[in-house]
Image 1 (cartoon, rainbow, N blue to C red):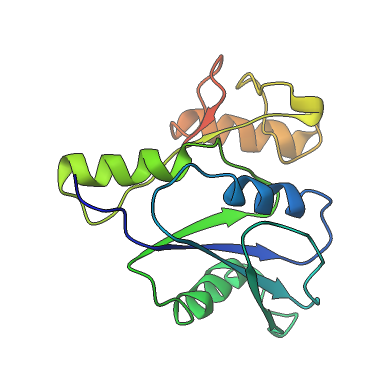
Image 2 (cartoon, rainbow, N blue to C red):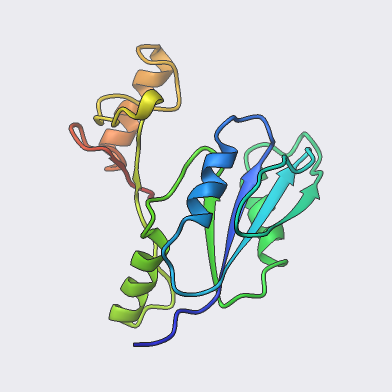
Length: 169
């Protein structure tokens, strides 16, 4: 078996969500055999404090506030330039990983000889309830905007009713 290479996990945050520490803790808890580095990219905020067994490097980036649609892409692009490990992962500050997430991705890359791997998201609601695929989880349920977004996601295969997975296109 190939030794697991070092990986940097980039977490973007504005410091506004109460879930960012859970995201970081899920990275620190990985069962991955290789070295894990965490880079917290703080968008217009200072790095929040969180005690972890894994050191966290943080960087503050202050993009102009008028950068809206492409903001996340620009921040990720800037973060990539700060990474020196062979592997790189992104994790949103309102998401978290199962303990074997990085191992699963690396095993998949190794098995198929792939230079990259991608995983779909299994979505959980408030209080750890599992998303059932019957609504758009990032807007208020039942509103016209939420229903429109949901129908578009179903039409494009991003969401399947009855499944907790949200696919990227």
